Image (cartoon, rainbow over all chains, first blue to last red; front, top):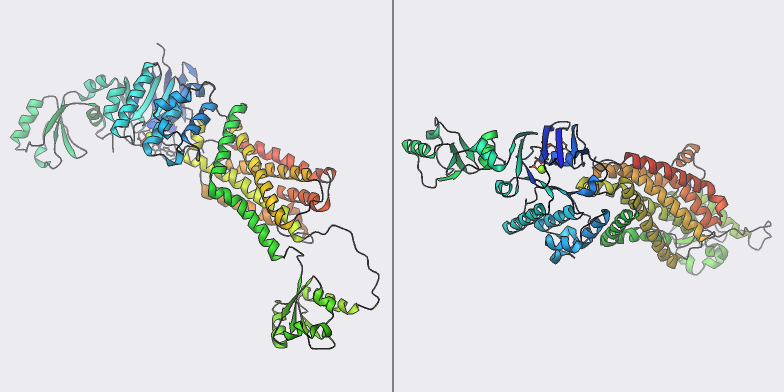
Length: 294
Length: 346
Ligand SMILES: Nc1ncnc2c1ncn2[C@@H]1O[C@H](COP(=O)(O)OP(=O)(O)OP(=O)(O)O)[C@@H](O)[C@H]1O
Ligand SMILES: [Mg+2]
């Protein structure tokens, strides 16, 4: 199937930084495409160029094989990372206002129910909690029944229950045949939702593929996690990559058995230790030496 | 262009205006307070009155009617100020706190004036003329021109000033704030065009401006009983044209930028000269040609000239068509500039 979206050699330069340098990828219809990367990697900038919100310094974006036309706006939905809602309107009025701006809006009752806004329909925008706002901005992204939906960190600030609800909404959207492009800092989210992933760092894509491919290609093996208070000194000179990650110390190895033996030889205290299969987080560490969450 | 989209943005903006209680109240309270304040300050009557000090204070109550001409004390241009003695009176006179000092006990009506004060010489003339009573004065004619109080003259100025602030800040400042906080970005992500958006903002603002103006008018008319010499509808037309003009200036300042402080500074920079040069508070009659020519650069000048002609001099459309034409053409020019410069982002 021809891609619904194609991005070629995208560049964006601000006076002091090169936020995006030569980003290219394509997205087949009906999938969920994830853009991952640490803070400042250029994810939001990339999305907003594709959405035609900010101009690119170079490169091109093709929607269904064509340059974006006027009807592009009618067919895409956007949830911004940072946005402000019209002040002094209620949730319901906001939905009605935005619905009226499109020629083929969804039924407001459906959207309201889907995004769990019924109970706060009369609440004013400026009095919403963080999670309620997220639900409303998601609803605004879906109000025109878009075939391509951009979600910039949709789960940031949500409690675990709301996050699960969001995930089930996004899965439904995919089942309806819509294409999703999202950014996230959560590996769990990316592994659960995304069919295809691009990892960005410092304005470029440093790896891409399905979660499984990425892990096999770049992360394989296992990670041995030691509590953060473990002294680093005796770990020096080990044959594996040793890194601090959050509060922990992570040791990557293709041979768990061998690795553990070496730790015991060096007289390292093992209580509090755990072992897991390499995941996307490890892929990222491996590729950049940095963490996704800085 | 899509009328439905303009309509929903228009409605949303109006809702913001009517629901923002504090700003809403201030919109009416500010001009009303100014009008009432000035009305009271000038006692609802003439702007020019003279303060005449009389000593000793007892002379005012009893003996005064014998020593001083009664017509003078009752003159509506005169405010009588009791003064303890001559020394204090002269002191006040030299400080311009009174315009004339009269000895209430002097049979000949001895008085002192301040030769450095124009008001004092005028008061002196009023005083001396009261001694003419009984003698045959030179033949006198009275003009039948309308009796225009300062408040009648000031009223259109206050209304225009309020319109100016409402248009410049309600459009210029507010749109810059929307740009900064991302509201514009959210709207840009819809099929709404810049032209539709700006049209809705203009229409909403002019609607609110005229609504405010009518409320203020009715409110202050109850107190001061304004007299509109010309056609009220023509006056409304003049205010609508002026309002649109000020809104279009607001659009130019709304076109770019994300700094509210900077925009606010720029708006102050143009609104204050506009307020003084366009004769909101006082007439520039008799001021230098440079100032008068400078005033012609500001559209407010034309708005106020036309409004005062209609309100105070019963002008007809033919009399103010020149001003109206200037307002309409500059509005169109400003609109085009504002629309061309406009950016959703930065
Ligand atoms: N308007 C701007 N002017 C100048 N620099 C900018 C601007 N917007 C973004 N940048 C810079 O571009 C880089 C990429 O920013 P971007 O917002 O795209 O990152 P991100 O990957 O979305 O990060 P996060 O995970 O924190 O949201 C950053 O270094 C940022 O400082
Ligand atoms: Mg971002």
